[in-house]
Image 1 (cartoon, rainbow, N blue to C red):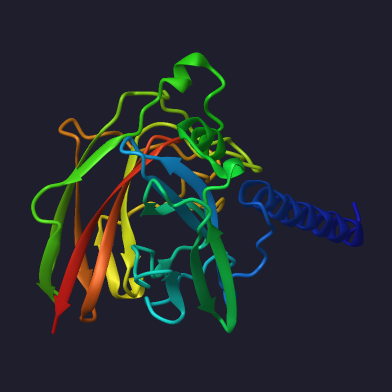
Image 2 (cartoon, helix red, strand yellow):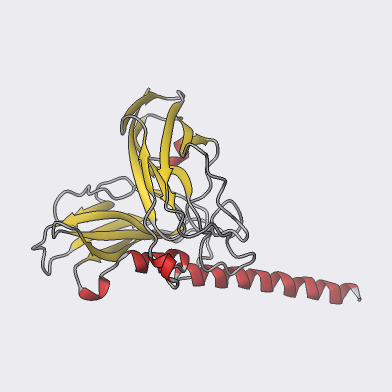
Length: 294
């Protein structure tokens, strides 16, 4: 084969690989992400669920339109919920790409046709999500499992229950800059679904199955926080260290069900660290508020 022919073949291969990656991102995230950084974050209303007492949860997520950049938007005029308190538990540190079922806003049983509005302004662009009790937005565990893991087809999958997770000790901590903060999560699961690695090649339409646990920054400037041991990514990334990476499988579970981590902060401020227990279809979170002093 001539040098020119070889070059053309390599170029076609590279283009096909790039197109395949873009196609995979589109399939899994709902829209194509082609920028590494510099793009905005859009809020998303996922749907509503009813609580046993008759009240409702409006469930929100978001789309960070960057493949790599984490975006920090503090609560305030650029990150607010209405009506009521602008702070209703929304994130301020936005992980890359599409993140679903991130937080809930509880509303009363007589909420009726009213709305909760989440407005985000980032990178000079303002976008809004409207939460309501419209009938076509009702969600349940079966829908979540199908959405996240392609689960719910088999009868045993429909019996899946969300993992349980708790944090040992206080949920409010204080630590100084540069001082290690030791945290331990305790998690357990029903063993449904059985562990299964992500698809061996792109497109990876669904994440790996089986209990996995990871810590990450939910509020505060996440660039100021480091974790030891390093945590896997809790968002879609086909390139590595993510449950959506081809061939990725959950790490072996500790016999005592404990997942310790040490967090260190380089700047003072108020942070929220979240631990996520995920079985491939359902998610349970626990949050620890951390006040970091000089």
